Length: 76
View 1 (spheres, rainbow, N blue to C red):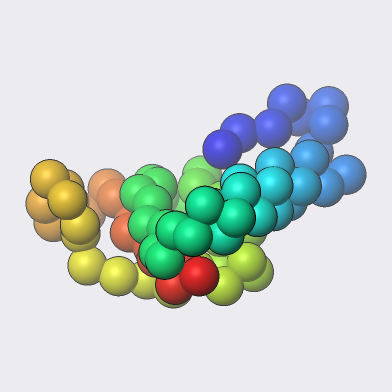
View 2: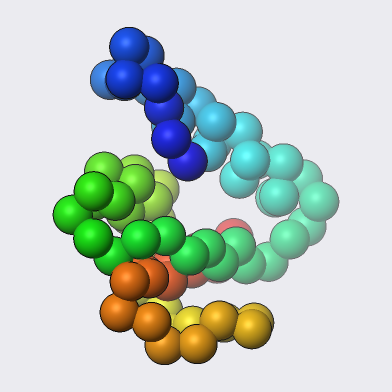
């Protein structure tokens, strides 16, 4: 998830993530997992996901171990 630099800090990404998670709950989805970058550039994204309750996890699906990736999951 990336926010236009002009719009950063006003909660756009948080509102989008909240909407997506609410929709997943309404569909009775039990778990959401994601992959994002592990580099410092992606630290704000990882912080956003952690604030929403996502925790680090092992690679999932067809992902393999990759030092450039961070994997996170949230049980709904």
